[in-house]
Figure: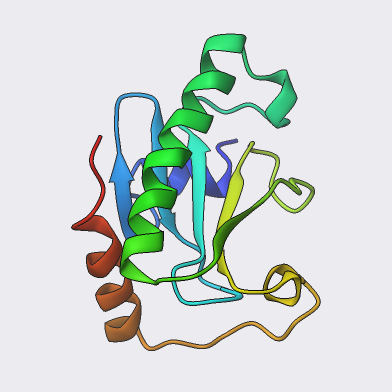
Length: 132
């Protein structure tokens, strides 16, 4: 059975897409810690990030770097935090989170709530700066 991320990639479940190429897909986390909190996933299902083939591991990091640069322009911050947790969905993924302090990437923090229109605006703000 396809993971929720594969179903998002295939368009079976809607998302707020940021960018995609032949191998990777980036979209907004619907339970964000900060505006701009984005997930980057490989299109090929692999449960654990470090089980990716070397080319895919390198590729997802380079793709994430481009998305992170766009997030930082759209939502100025000190850094883009990178988190790899991977227990909740059996599909490798990277969280990219705008941060000004370590507390901004604390997953115990309450998640932000945005309207669909706000999510669309956030996605558009980031997408326009992605250069693949």
